[in-house]
Image (cartoon, rainbow, N blue to C red):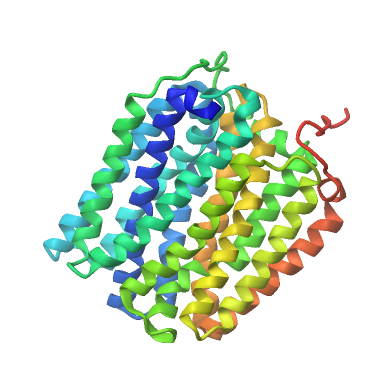
Length: 405
């Protein structure tokens, strides 16, 4: 395999697995612990909001930092901060001095670190392999995270049986391991000349995306689709109160989308999308919305697990196409700032989607809120097909034309 000829990408892949496992283990522990302490779907939603706020406030600055300084150093430092925050969660839980508010403060620091991690990671990856291998590298990078998302939640659910401090400690160790792996990584192609920091350059990523409707349409579609269809925040409720499968079952449910995603990532790494990629992305979003509705109505663990498998596969198709568009159609000197906006959209759809799910579940009930979210995803996809016809008809990478003057 050609990617194996580039050692830096190998270290990058391993770091992604370690950091992804840390994030997933911690997410299972936080979700179960907060719900166990409060029995409140609203507080579960607050977990997402607390992580989203630092991302929203810091992402544009983080993108500019990624375009001016060593992206490898930024990525490694962000993982180190997450490792230290995980250690605080472990010690605070073990010593019984960390309540819900303390958990929220700590995960806010994790959200701040991830705000810098996202743009640096996205901008770093294309410098590790030749340009023609970028779509395959993105698929393998997605596979790394999904591998972690399969193993991590199950480990987190099992470790929680020994006390919440145990999964927190393991997550901290994995994040610090990821930081060490990044430290030994060496880029094959150095980054470009650095622009001076100005107020206008801070927002240049937004201006660039606004001028490219295919990129704008793809990342905004992801934003609203996952924002409405994000059922993962409510998985503790399904595991505890609806399917009655306990903490281990919660880990299995959180792993299910990653299993489908990993299988799809492996396929896309061998056969990356070349033609009709716009249609394929919209089809994937439709499937994502439909499976969300089916999951909402399911009362069977087997059916719920199967629908989450399909959901993860559909999400990966959309992610690989969108990420390839952003990476290949953005100049290297702009990748940090454009990646920052993309990270903001992704962070919004994930963390703010968790908040939206928690709020709507507290108002309408868990099942109606999840089902309505899936229907909303389908409606958004139909609307975006009309608003962004160039994205709908987009054929293959490399066909994006620069906007007219």
